[in-house]
Image 1 (cartoon, rainbow, N blue to C red):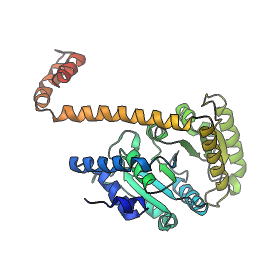
Image 2: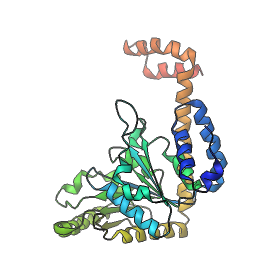
Image 3: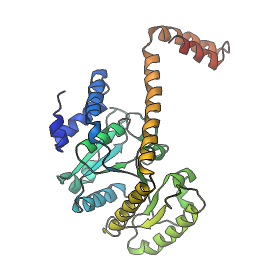
Image 4: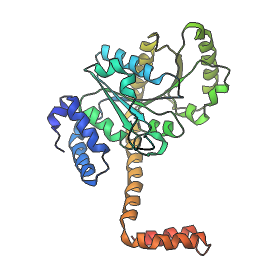
Length: 318
């Protein structure tokens, strides 16, 4: 697959989409080609602010992202939205509903929306989301929004690849913090209570107070105290304040020399994760290991060998 890298760097959406398709391909040849492309584009990456957005189903993520994205475009930003869709259990592809849900934003020439199938990645975050972010940065997008499927481990996964992590909440103060896990509160740089409009305004304020109290019990990065805000994406209220808060976080993280440090830690963690993935692939490709594996598995099942010794025997074959 030939990709015009000059067109990609000039922000050509077709060239960018082709490069992302290459990154997402399962073919070994395509994966190698994709890595060479990313390598050559590395000098032009890293110039965006990466924002993770999560929240329970029904919280209005797509509406929020569209209104927020349109606001950013008005401010002169180029916005890429990487919406991680659940893979279809039958065809294995992506349901790809986000482009239809963000119709106005998807038509804007300064926005790029890419739904990606999770492809069985842990926690519902697309395996290739990190590579896709780099390609979007090389194409000149200066704000990258990563929307997660909002289930289980996805929050941890996306928090480990973005600069700012935001969790959208509903104005339901009486729902015992909506079953939100303490771990998510520890990850969040901000909680934004959406749908704070009409009869829900007072409820949203109560919810804000609940979350602010909960946040005080948790230790966060020394330079930033996580904010709890209210907004209404449907009525375009307080959206500007959300961006002002993120801009304040960005400025503060640069002043405290945390921004580059965090990115470096994320890249190291990414490398370590890939190391294990590549080792696993090498194990699966080794014919001797494939021959011995069923026999060793049976020994473990029969209690004739411990799982440790069986695993060690396989590793030693490498």
